[in-house]
Image 1: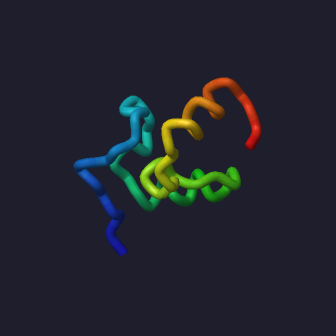
Image 2: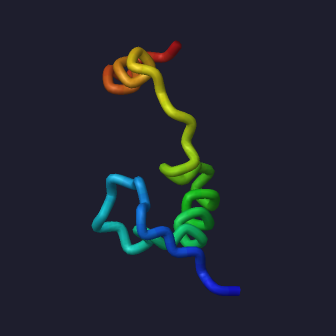
Length: 57
C-alpha cells in the first residue's frame, strides 16, 4: 500500500515531519486521541473566539 500524499495539505504546521503525509498524520493524531487538522469540523466565528479565550460552551 502506497502512502497517501496530499500536495494541498491545509495544515498550518508546515514544518511538521508528517506534513502532506496523510496516513502518517492520521495514525499519529489518532494515537493521541485527536483528529487530523484536515478532518476537523469547521468552527464558527464565535467558536473560534471561545477557543481562543479558553471558554467552554
